Image 1 (cartoon, rainbow, N blue to C red):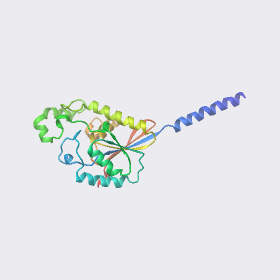
Image 2: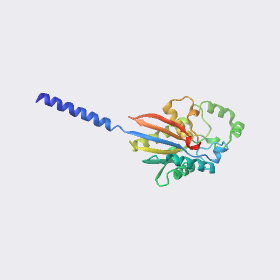
Image 3: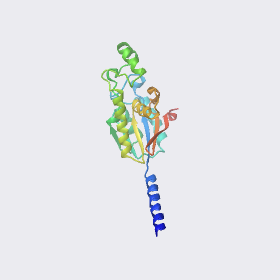
Image 4: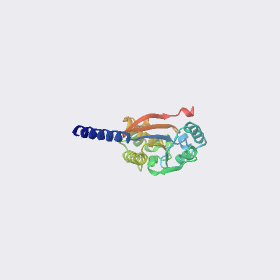
Length: 222
């Protein structure tokens, strides 16, 4: 009886261990940057400003749609800015898109709507410092990068927690994807983490740990 009891207890512990392992979920994020806008083409800074897609941007999204046809998505989230929502509606015509203010682009403050030449004429010193290290230098009236990073991290973390073991599309912005990927890759150069318009970036959470599986994939645009 004693040996059988010990064996039974061991079996129960082993079974519980298996159950715990099987209940570790893997969540897959497909991060999609919106298609190009006229402001992108004109190289104007566009953060909170609500700019829609250009004709070229809509063409990009059509190409991206064909690429994503074979993927089954459980949920679709999007920044509430027009350029992201337009991208989402073109990609997921039969799916509910959940708008999320936390996925907005960073607010560029006094740089909003300005071209490089205009910025250099008005804010050259501040701008150069910010480009060199955006995590330590701020733009007047802009959202500080550390606050932006926290906002994005919290928004995506809440999405992951609400959708364990699912494949999720998140349509957002270059800066949003960039700051998120930067936190995973620990790349010291933030700008290298900013993807192109209408690109795909894939992050998988396995046992709670993020893994960057694909970054800035634009093969569908070639």
